[in-house]
Image (cartoon, rainbow, N blue to C red; front, top):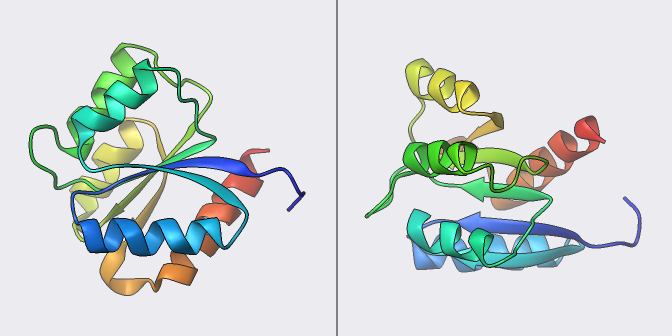
Length: 129
């Protein structure tokens, strides 16, 4: 990875997990932005934030991850950003739906340590460059 920090927007309604992932990504040369809901993330994107990657949970109040992906696509908010789902939902139908909505990766929280999540996101980013 080069010295330029990559921007990541992490979206999760669990404050503990959000902080933990924010720390792990910042320790790995990422400029970290966070949102605690799909609505808050959409507001940040509309406000001009253009992350290299957006890492999002699916189960959130107000607007879930699927609705967030649909809104991002409909409004063409971040067409060049990589979208990665980080969820405990591990059904194949959820994975398929996320992929259909433009997710480049799908990470199951329960089976990945925080550092493994960082490694998987970096691998997805490197494949897209």
